[in-house]
Length: 275
Ligand code: SF4
Image (cartoon, rainbow, N blue to C red; front, side, top):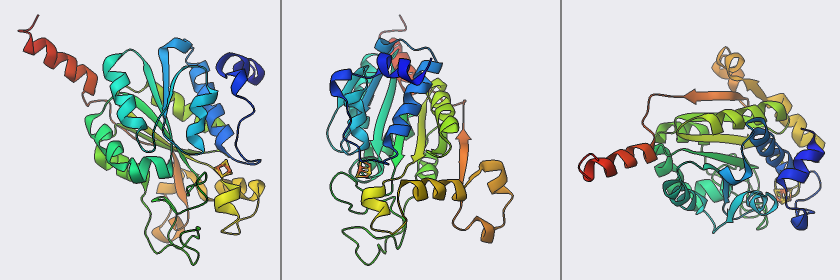
């Protein structure tokens, strides 16, 4: 299916054009989600896309599936309710680093712990873009933000490691430079039975790039090219060589953990006397 056919099929024409700034990476990540759905040949009515609040979360309004554009940080609890009510749905959460790891951080770790079957695509642009460039829990230490004009002194989360430690059973990272890989990782995340988190490194030239003098969209995407390494190559580096670099690909997968809605259904059957 061509990109034009995908736009016709999966986007709501009345909602376009989108609000994203020129050079923003959000369109690439959203395109990767759609490519993954197209590759898996999922019926539109079998997909639910739930988002929170922020630049990336606007994607749910553009996509023609069952969608909820919810409240700040609350995409995952709403997605949890949707999945429990209709376990056959492919539930995809669209969220940003501020939305998912600050106000929504509590929900993220508990959904991972439960291993509920949903795919969280976390657009990581390292900042709160929509609200004016405040630093988020994924803003790198010493990077500038409107709330940290001299650089933040806070250490940032490695959200992939955090999700893994919390119990996620599929954890991956891609970038908008490596878009075909990112689409493939989202495909595998949707196929995975359990909680999957795909961190999508994406450029925000307006709120993050400008304040940190990284350059425009081209320089930001070149930065991704120059700092991301496939996991196998990354693992071969010394600690010193790893500094400033990050691994991409599937970082962790565990297929042996019971999925939450299945466990819940078994409990209901047992409570009803095994019938
Ligand atoms: Fe994209 Fe940043 Fe603009 Fe938001 S503020 S639309 S993340 S470039």
